[in-house]
Length: 264
Image 1 (tube, one colour):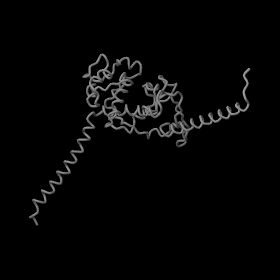
Image 2 (tube, rainbow, N blue to C red):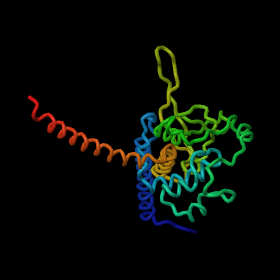
Image 3 (cartoon, rainbow, N blue to C red):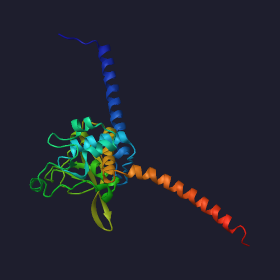
Image 4 (cartoon, rainbow, N blue to C red):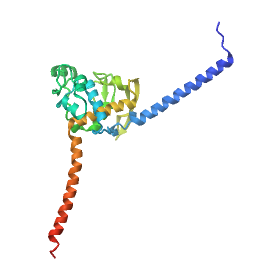
């Protein structure tokens, strides 16, 4: 028969109590951190904070868009080869990792999903995302990607705060995990309304909160680039144009002084 030394057993219980206390404190800290970084009620103030000059982010965004989004959504104004050229990806890698087997690098990025099937599955044809950032803005796209929540009443089992009753399933739930939206009842001019309060994690994903935020921002960044691939060049060119105008203005002012110096 196994016997336990009372002293050692007491120490073991004390150690276990300390371990449980540390776990509770750690969970509370994680919950507080999650609330501060995106699980709070102020989701409409979340910012994408992306930068189209960040080439590494654009490369990751291109990879993730083609892996997770392109099955349903197109970028019909962008070619695979243009992505490789702008994002400094060697053509061999573009052909190997970005271009589907039945496509060429010079093809436009279009979805392989038949329109009729898409309408049958989702009730509508998934939109082309070439100009989605120009239409809705980067912050909205980021908020959309980060506010999916479990909703058994929906056909896909999920819903979205940024776009209620969205037809799009939560295709990145494996990465982000599943979370529940908690609502509270508030009095709005004598009318009781349900208002979003916070998210509660249900099932963890393969990425941490910070990693998923980076994932979402990379996709937003890539869509921002796709909406206007020349914007980085345009911004850099704008600096030289402004400098030229300043120098030209100075020269014009000096010329004016020279012409009018003898006029009293």
